[in-house]
Image (cartoon, rainbow, N blue to C red; front, top):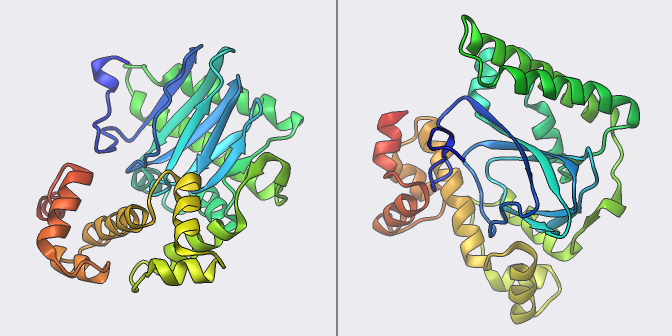
Length: 282
């Protein structure tokens, strides 16, 4: 990756969106992580399993994975075969500014509501998807007059197509995903109650497991300890609240951080910027 297209370790996207078309036999296999932007993954060839929030998706060529900015995920790649994929990083705010009434990010919201990040286009839809991706790729490095507008227009066409696929595909192919129902239930409960007190013993009891077994299974499914998962999600929520105008101290308290100095350190370590500077930037 050239210097121009580097992304900081904090997970910030320095452009409105960026498209990568990658072909190799190694792939970039990262540990569990999250981004400060939404992510589209389209597998063209190869063998890869994507684990997103405890659910492991076994991808097939032309599968589309929609990963929201707060979702913890990683790719497990079979390095014995060539791995070709398209990855698109998107600043949601940019898309909403570009087409404010378009509802273009609704496919991400719908995937989150379904708790199922995978779309598997039908054969008849793949040609249109391929053509749209090629046109977007063609304009990515264009520097002529109106190039930025052309890129935005092509991205809009892609998002319209993805939403149409999502609306048409109201089924869930359970053969394409593996997950533990008890841990999935715990994850849902955590994400719906981030501003409330969350106790590991109570989460384990809700999942009908001992504390030890729950903690061990949780980490194997998500790559995080229960404590780190909750803290990470609360930090992401706090960052969103600060961006929306809430004071840093109020956001910390709202998200369950009683010690502001500890919150400040954790926030700065995670995002590479202090809560105050994030608010000032916004």
